[in-house]
Image (cartoon, rainbow, N blue to C red; front, side):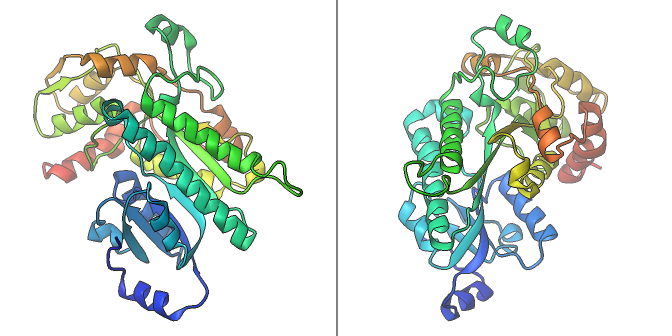
Length: 357
């Protein structure tokens, strides 16, 4: 089902014979989708963006889109119908079921996270066949693709490189790693038995750590204890943290995540040495997040009450990742430490968001 497109979009769809060049963003209704669409609209004049999500987009995001589509990435027929109107040179495939949700419904998670990705890759292959150009497919992956069997193994491993410890312990991690391999196949090996060049798409993945935003409290992610603690502090609430004090994971701010997507999207294909890259900013323990927050919110009270299932997931993920490949290949550079993120972005943003500036 389609949400009614804008007036400009309607007239274009009726009057043209050729397809309009556009960018497709799936999962456009999520926080990353919101921020990415705004970033694209600000930096690229006259670009047509098609926003795709399970629910109608907020007006403040839909205004940047030539058209918005309500639907499920599992619906290949619906996705293909959009290509009757648009030629997609770039596809940002953000739609996914997150880690905790995927553990509760692994079958549906597979259908959405792997099946949905396969549908977008098929869309890109069709575009390659129709135009001769290989569309870029940007895929947000995750540190969940890694897996440590024990806490001792995690402690001794140090920052994990892209080729190491690829034994995910969650359905979410398995899904994301499988999708990465599909993207690599369609970029490097598709049609390898045919005459001529192999590869049909330009697939690029970023393995994101936990993402922290000053504006939105995410749900369904296992790294959410970081942002949840921040928002509890801003609301002057007691927070029951679902992991131990010594739990350690890499994080970055949402603006840094958007910047990394923009940077890798702008890099020439020849500069890339792999299909999936680590990015990260800082890697505090849960206790260190608590202590850093207390410098700004002295009354903050945090009780550490580990949830066994979510703690198991966190214990299997890396305490930090190695982002040297992204730095070397496409100029990635983190903007923040934990303290600078709090001082220059998170605390001012939280105060503005909750009206207690």
